Image (cartoon, rainbow, N blue to C red; front, side, top):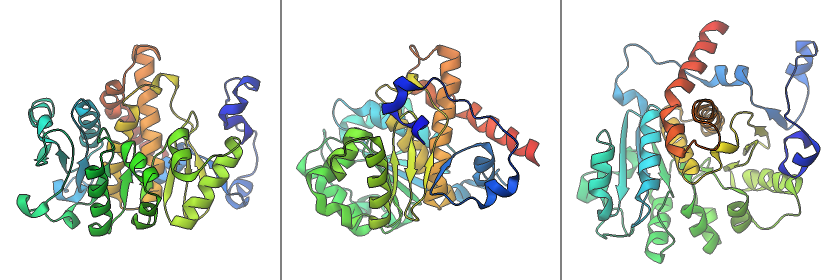
Length: 325
């Protein structure tokens, strides 16, 4: 595990996983709380589409995102959600973003807040929508940290009893009111980077302690914690931790996390199992980032390139799955 941690980067080069011919019995029965995500694991999770399916089979996702000056975060997450296969995608945004989203992403449906600059209230009745009808809800990209927005987050936790995906400012709002942690629906997915993790769960001395704390909190709160990094780790309520092996330094740019939120929200709405959704979503996000880096270089790629490369990432996974068959 030490090869996967940031603080050891100066002592290791690029890690290549090689098959040294251990008997498969060892892999299947060795007891450990940690595993490295590989193509075999992803192939077991990924579900090809039924040719006779319709949009209702792939979930209705809701993204609560954006504020004045941060509508780009909303646009990235919404587009990523659509590109990841959500049957229907709705976003709740402040009024200032209506023309932006409807113009940039015509495939998405839009609910606007009463406020022009921030999100202050989700009123499903005014849109003839019941939050329980959404198969996945993602909250956080670009929403800001206003008190009114924190109340919206609390209302979602009280009304919506299915898992939610929480990122960015949603985590910052939780860090300012830790009581919200105990109101989050079971099996929800939190996607903090190290600083956000620290604000929500407390300081740690090193990467090892941070991972152990993520394990502890995932079990204690019955949540899936996606701790973002070079080898993003996914801590689950069952005590296990999965390390991702896709992605690159070109993804260390504003907007990449917003893309991940959209991806995870779409997959949760389709797969319903949040542990597998988190594993598949993180892997896809990194794989699309790797494809984008090959095309544009790590320096020049931007978060929008990750979205545009999701199609090739899916094709890569589906091809591997067919070859395995």
